[in-house]
Length: 229
Image (cartoon, rainbow, N blue to C red; front, side, top):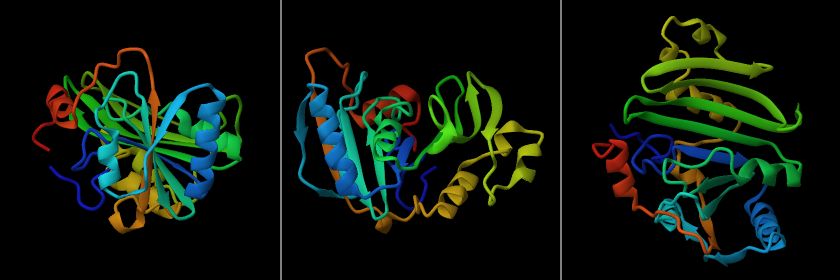
């Protein structure tokens, strides 16, 4: 079933966009620091020209493991970050590190439909300068399935707008779903389902010497059992 709006977080671009990070800093600032950081690490880098959303998502192909491409999208006071890890994106990647370098807040949103032998779920991770060292988490909420077995967890101080009554639902998958995730993001000023909120995206591609096992988005969707989306 297609998700309306931007097509992210389990929508029409699946598996691209199963993981989307948001850094609370302007695109020009995040892009400049990302380029500087990569070059400081000695990485050979290609930087694309600005490309409108959603066409900038095509710059993530082929999807790879390990990933080599990152797209940074201008969202006004926020910058959206995605990479081309072939199972929907790597939530532990560079976004939180970039946010720490810039002393900015970072929000990682994850949602994927049930796929394969029963994987999927919804997660929200938040990082900030007032978070718990060493990773600086300020809040996490998740309801995830692995091989059909659901697990639930939360940590950190709940935000004022959270629907904590939902967290007492008997079925774990009902405690935190895509609709609630999108609602929380909206309270943070992140309009993830509004395609007009996303501006131009820029792709940073690391040129690497090792093999990456590439796939097109459609090949990845078939492998994951989501070709019907």
